[in-house]
Length: 207
Ligand SMILES: C[S@@+](CC[C@H](N)C(=O)[O-])C[C@H]1O[C@@H](n2cnc3c(N)ncnc32)[C@H](O)[C@@H]1O
Picture 1 (cartoon, helix red, strand yellow):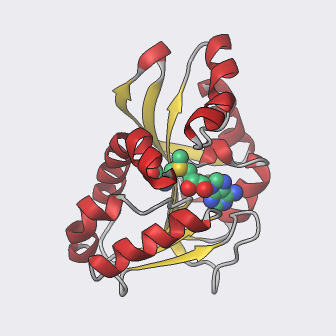
Picture 2 (cartoon, protein in one colour):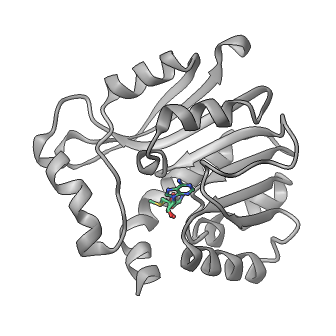
């Protein structure tokens, strides 16, 4: 049931995200996917992952999603390209550092409790020239109704959509963590003036 609802609410957005992200990343690179979810993106992008010879580590806190994710990996023979781990980003440790060329938060950053602390952690895992990619819905203006509704959606859909992300707060956070914006791509406009955006960042020392 949880996977069915997940597919219903998240699939369309997931496709936008991974299509943009997987096309953006270079070949032969290591990627950390924070909150990989049920891995449904691999149904559509398994060929791209293989042709680019990507090495993806997916972490998530939801075992049910990860069980589904493991089945997708097996079904599409992605064992040499994707590995998964049940771990929260706050506790995860890569095998060695620096390790990743790209760290991806696809619709997961808004679920992280202490975002500043998490950025401090993950920055250390980036290879020189590494980038952190965020894909998320953002709002320019205060949206009281959305702030009220969004956290409650999890009781109806069983999916946690997290808090509303405001453009100013997000960019101020990036600045305070010395992350420069390399690209800010509008993917799609949504209801209530929400925007799906892919924001690519790199530590100041690389920019
Ligand atoms: C909305 S889903 C997005 C899944 C997938 N990235 C996509 O775009 O379809 C967010 C995922 O982040 C996971 N998540 C939430 N908090 C997390 C944390 N602290 N560490 C790792 N994963 C987390 C959730 O379990 C969920 O699977």
